[in-house]
Image 1 (cartoon, helix red, strand yellow):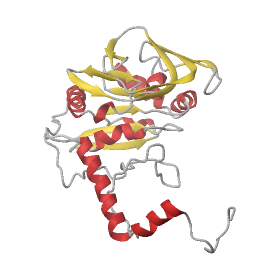
Image 2 (cartoon, rainbow, N blue to C red):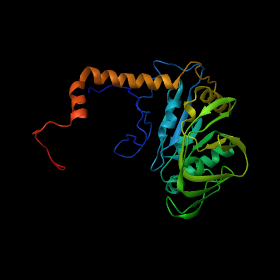
Image 3 (cartoon, rainbow, N blue to C red):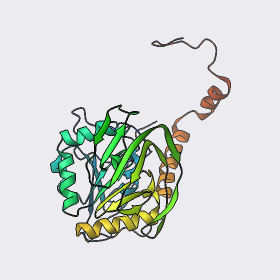
Image 4 (cartoon, rainbow, N blue to C red):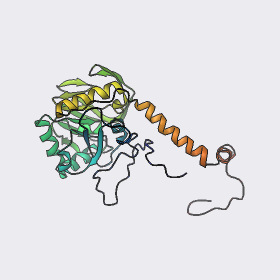
Length: 286
């Protein structure tokens, strides 16, 4: 298939990064819409900094933000890169304790604490939500035992052997929200304002729900809250449908396959297997 610029197909747990390992201003692959096509609706843009924690998972949670006109998403690994961000996101990870140590080593933990103290928005999702809490008891994932969290949310987390798997539906900011859960951590919420089975304290939000920002009405309401807290003249577009944009990207991929691949031959391989006598090229078993 030929290279197609801006094809924003979900990559789930894999994110391309420069060989140096510095995330800098890494764009979100297809960023589904590009700023030259869809300018912001207000006078300002919103800047979102996603902490590039180790073993990051489900980072597609922020794809819906990148799809919004006027929202700039970048992955960061240095505290100074949080300075001009209107929203800091601590995403999901397959190693919460390791991610927590990384945040501290990089100075990002202190930067997040400063943001919270200044009333600047922070969002933690799944493992990021757990890291923002008071304490983690982990004898399952890292087997590190009791580890102190960042203390930005009144939450204590205990890791269970069995994963929680769910497709929750709820309401937040007056909007219907759908998401999905896949995590070992069981959160005990000890205070704050309820938020998608997690909680909110001031400008700090935390939830185990992945995919919540794909709910268009909720995403707009959340971005309005962020813009208000950040003092930005930003307005979310009234007509952005993330589901439609994702379908559009899949259709583009389907068109590429139809135009450039021998689909009849592919179907024969799927239905009948490889022809007898085809030359084998190592490595691997013949």
